Image 1: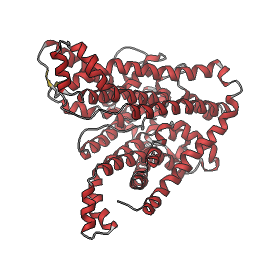
Image 2: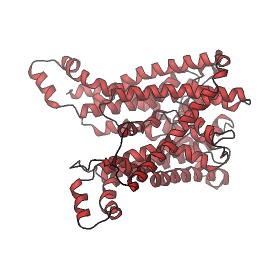
Image 3: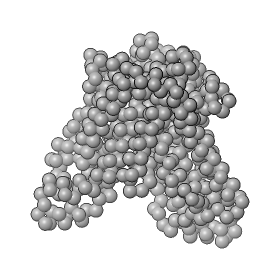
Length: 517
């Protein structure tokens, strides 16, 4: 639709932005971490445990998500029940939840004064449960989509040849779901390995991840050498997993939809028990943390009058201000990137660069490369945009790919100029996808925590950093204030979810979330 020259002009702003905010900081990070990495970092038992635990908790989350998610996904794909469409849409809700809300919800359930009566603090199960809150819905949704692709004729043929339900699952259904599931398991590992907010709140002293250790080395010890080496190791692991993810997506082609098996009502008691267990898994791992935040926030409403102070007003103003600016700038950059992509697959792949690198590594690289700008608000906003604009670029790019070519050809044959073609034909068709991408960008900005904690100053206080400060202060009043603020943040994220769902043509899932940093 656009000429080569127009694409180059549109590609210039996002490419320069990625170079300045991602590629060059990562290169500086590699330079900082290269030398100490070869001189005994891995021989330090403490740092070696941090790296090993980061890998172990990511792998354990993948295994648990597989064991719990596949049976639940099979039940959702095979059984029809009242509210099934709503349940599938709500699987996307954890993607827009800030990590601090999830962490506070887990603590409200299994913390020292948790609603469950179980105190799991200073144990690995707390972090694993928080990881499952975010990642189990991803596994369930991808596996359910895979099971939905099983051709009805193939499954009927297997059953007619004497295969029982279990044998038909392993021989027919499981191979169909595997191409959908394996790449998303790589994403689950990346999310857990590069996660920061949950690990900071739930990991404690012993079970904090390498991302938390990088932050500690920089913020509290000023040990840039070891922090750079750990960041380099983290980049190597994340880059290797990202390469496996790309290879799996290319190798395991998703089967085309052909006579899919439609879900049927659960008729036998076994089917009803299976469906009930699937819905219970969703409630326990994806619903209970949010319900716990809501319950604790409502219980703490008596302290609402004392909460409205100068700190909260500043945090609300900054969060709103930063989010609006992030949405505006992300919309411009995302549109430029998507419109410039065309058939240039390399340019489309570059939009995923901020997704592969953890926000902690991004923030640390920015500190190393631009030390004189670390106290500049423009640097913080640019980091927000870096994490948010790929959502816009991806959403608009998918809409452009699905746009019928005959519409543009008809407009041109009627004498429409390129600008008139864009304004009267392309732009109206892009608006739902653009709103979807902007909603994800807004949710990312509202819940952003890692970059804010690295680059923020006291006058740049946001809701996420204020919640973290309240949690770190003694006293029940501060705990209640943290719960109230978490409830407020959850409401804002739910509003973003409502915007996404209202603008979506059909239920879908984000490509990579992050606002989970």
